Image 1: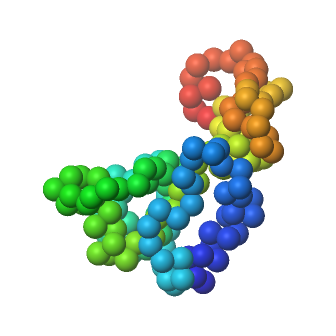
Image 2: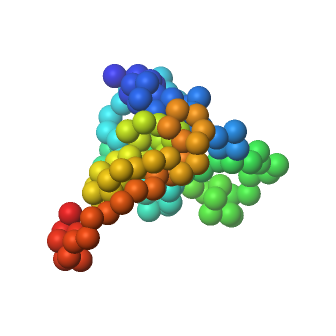
Image 3: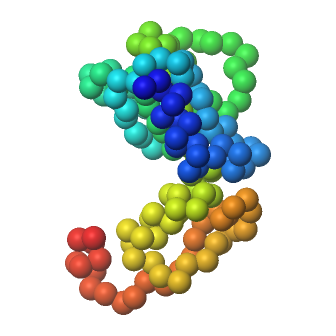
Amino acid sequence: MEIGELIAKLEEKYPFSLQEAWDNSGLQIGNPKDELKNVMVSLDLEEETINKAIENDCNLIITHHPYLFNGAKSIDLSKNFYRRLMLAIKNDLTIYAFHTNLDIAKDGLNDNLCDILSIKNTSVLEKGKEEGLGRIGYIEKQETVSFIKK
């Protein structure tokens, strides 16, 4: 399977069209036509994340937060930000971000967190595309220890 095929399946559920106008979800760097080996999922793209992906033969890293937001005017490899990109390029990694589209989508990140935390009677905090950003709801009173064990 090509990396792009997996991304297309994820995009069916969490379409990039849902992202906020300021967001930059989607391909950050790499080649979606590469054959998929293994996948790593991370909140952010850190150097440690890239190194772990390399160690575990992952050629796709899916992050929640986009790495690229603004166009670069120069690429100074003495800066950590650009060294990470170079490390990813040298190791044929593809990096995709699912950010506000994952936050907004029905059964996306916010809905899953509500399920994990047993938040009931949820409503959308900020209406927008599809579901909207954030959720607010009610947690039944329970002992702290039993809540943490979830």
